[in-house]
Image (cartoon, rainbow over all chains, first blue to last red; front, side):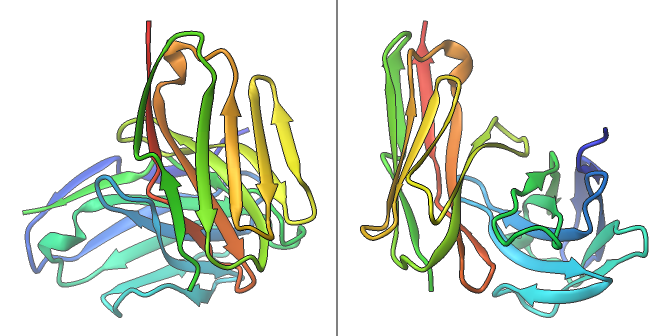
Length: 115
Length: 111
């Protein structure tokens, strides 16, 4: 049973460029959430996708956008990259139809470096 | 806005000692609290999930308690081992379904 998979594992970009990160949820899960984790800090919620729509959003600018596909996989897009976007980007999946107390399962993350 | 605090930020103990990690949160209206482990540069591994109606959860050497009214949770790790060295994060799910994380406690277990 495959867990949450993310690609790529590492990425180096320059300021102003655009980047796309990908996530495949754990088998049987239908909800994907994205988090940004700066060095030495806890993850910060970016947004959540369910039924191919953005359901919730954290305090991130419109440069951060996403998409969910019919197979529940998801992409995170960041435009006009800034140095401050350098972080570990984590994807988490869950089953929305379960109780509100469902457990989150995380991928290993994509380490993004903006030069 | 939910604020989650973890103290201490770092902890170093000799092998065999019991670990006590603290997590506090400002808004007691929560659905659940989850403890995670994170190895350097890696993703998060879920350790324990405590629902708002529960007082504690146990898994092997790990025990987590929850006092919702006082906004506190404690993770106990018995008989620590060098393999327990990692950063431990607590996360609180609030009424708006958003998950708020603490900054973590980095644990080093000395052999």
